[in-house]
Length: 301
Image (tube, rainbow, N blue to C red; front, side, top):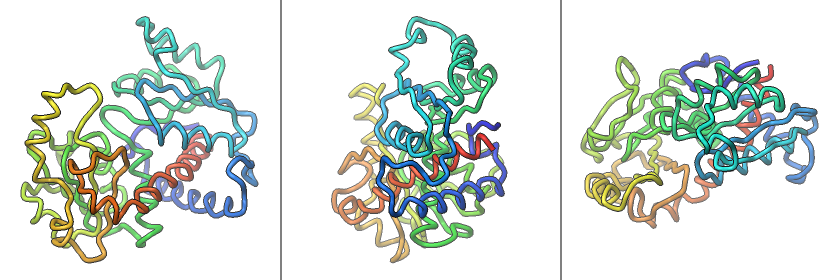
């Protein structure tokens, strides 16, 4: 059994196997209703806890539906409904959950929770998002890019705006999948884990950054815990990094745009660009389902 915590901790060949299995799982469901079991229900008899310390739409639904399709059962719960909200330690919670469930998917605002969980839970743990990384999203993004365009190897991927947790996972993925990754945004919001990376570059000027790009990626500039004052400050600092039709003209003509949602129109991305690429965003969201199913299979392999 294996944990899926960060892309950097998994070999390139294993990541590639997950993506190949994702394609197989997606194709195998072509003629099935959403509630029907997979032809090979890999989670039959398994119980998976979905533990969410932060709100979620895509992560919660995609994991819950995926578990059902794989023949497993899910228990979805927020930390406010558990003794974690009364200061019980994650280390204690992990050992208790080991008596009840076969896997935990954790969405948290503190990456240390994941580390405590993996050390004390006796079965696989999946990172459903932390303050430092979001590997499920980025692996699904790579699957989506390759589904629409072809291999991401050697391509130029540009992140615009806040170098957040998703951006951190892209930095890790660049090395594993051999693509160029460029961050363009205020220096104060650069991604955390770039030291020593041969695949990472920084370009302050967004027009220079997107030149010859194959993929532009952005995400919301704001987090739920930020005050209106903090949000206003961020909006001022990042206004030049909004993906607009004008900026897109500096990239390759066939360049894709990715956004993992939720979208704040006229902040990180213009309404016109959203309208042009919204079907792509929906493909990203759908592929979370197939890739996460493959991740869960991999954890038990």
